[in-house]
Amino acid sequence: MDLVVRAARAVTGQGAEGPATIGVDGGRIVAVEPGLADLPGDTVLELGEDEVLLPGLVDTHVHVNDPGRAEWEGFETATRAAAAGGVTTIVDMPLNSLPPTVDAAALEVKRKAAGGRVHVDVGFWGGAIPGNTGDLRELHDAGVFGFKCFLLHSGVDEFPPLDAAGLEGALRELATFDALMIVHAEDSHAIESAPDPHGEKYRDFLGSRPRGAENLAITHVIEAARRTGARAHVLHLSSSDALPLIASARAEGLPLSVETCPHYLSFTAEEIRDGATQFKCCPPIREAANRELLWQGLADGVIDTIVSDHSPCTPELKRFDTGDFGLAWGGISSLQLGLPAIWTQARQRGFSLADVVRWMAERPAAQVGMTRKGHLAVGYDADFCVFAPDEAFVVDVAKLKHRNPVSAYDQRPLAGVVRSTWLRGSRVTGDEPRGALLTRGNC
Image (cartoon, rainbow, N blue to C red; front, side, top):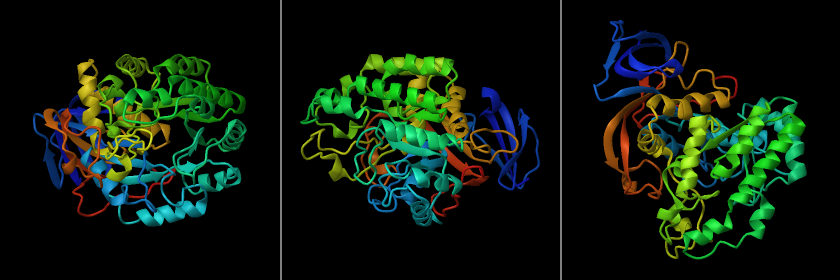
């Protein structure tokens, strides 16, 4: 075999954690032996006693912004940051790049921009906007993993939202070829009726994006999925009020899934200082009691996955000069930090690394139909994260691999350090891009 990994602790299939020996040949896992077996290999990697072998994480919600706004991030920096955080596969969002990925020609532009520049594997979402229903099947056939839409202004004019009729029409089209719709679920009319965001006070910004707007939009998504039979996924859930709605829809048998993000599980509205626009995101970070109910939603299985929603920008766009939440770009830069951020919170609540792997590797891969990602099992890609769960560090944005030194996690102490990341049996160093561009059905 090319590589043998011997680990006193490894998270393997079905949530098991214990000693294991993994054999790799041709970039795939060909053997998983319980205990520290003596398998022959050209290279043998012995993990330290303080290290745990995890499958490489799968982050299905990343804004790379390349081409067109690569000064916000870019494929090279995004994928280096992903690898530094134990993430071996990302799926790039269709907006904030120019052109947005709303037809097959735009997808080809994005693939050319990424070609030869990625350090982890990268897939792509398509976009559903007014007027492109006829383009969705061609995008699907070109290999996107599904389609994203907004129900209110996206923040960029070139990616407009769908109204109620547009959402249902797009879902009916996607149902004909069983494609997945992922939805930014905030109701535009409810947001328009809320107070305008302005000034430095976080509580005023929070009031401009009320829970009711999220709850109402999720209700619309559920009803549209019921009428059309299409598969739907709720992005970046922040309102715990919606959990009973989602649980009820799932009990009914509707094909509905939901994600949340590390920032909603880590931060609370009460701790955000006025003017601290690095914490602005949409939907917003809510109160401490809401955070605990989201954790309960994970424990109950109502929330399926945790993904970053890495949405970076230049420091100027965060408007640190004024601290005005109404003017600042909304988005949390966190791609490199998701695993330690979640582990820091999860361990305090009695969850295991196997739980974290389920939320951040196994289920995200399954959601998008990746059959060779997210598990330490025979036949899967040899994508590994070597993690030291008991080592702590303090985040220094200047040392992160993201393009811009802006993150809500700056100076926050976190538990768990990624010691190394391996893609198809080769260690990712950040020097030589070895990532592949993925298409649906071929990973």
